Image (tube, rainbow, N blue to C red; front, side, top):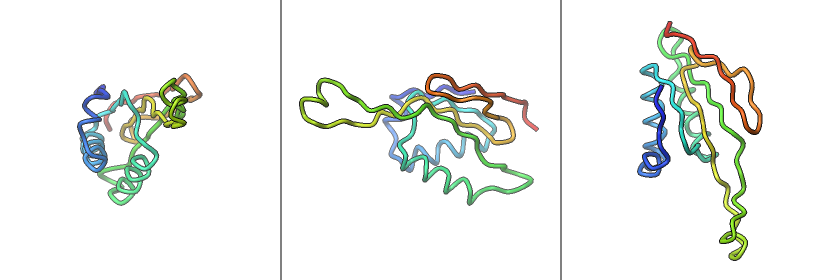
Length: 115
């Protein structure tokens, strides 16, 4: 399992993030992203993953995130610019990671050994 810092993710372009995640998950790693993906990045990740699924090789990904949070900071209020903040995301191979429960403040998952 790899814990990926917000700083590392911010260094990458959106396409780089998606490629990095797919490569790591295909190698059997489970990733915990300190800063989640944007909705566009999540959609792109799912789209690319779906095109790479192979029954005997790559079963796809399991992904869970905390719900997005609106940033109502003082700065945002002053400039009338509420930004959506992404939150922690867990991503892993679909055959190793199964989400048991998810709510606003908890993600409970079962992790199994590589098949």
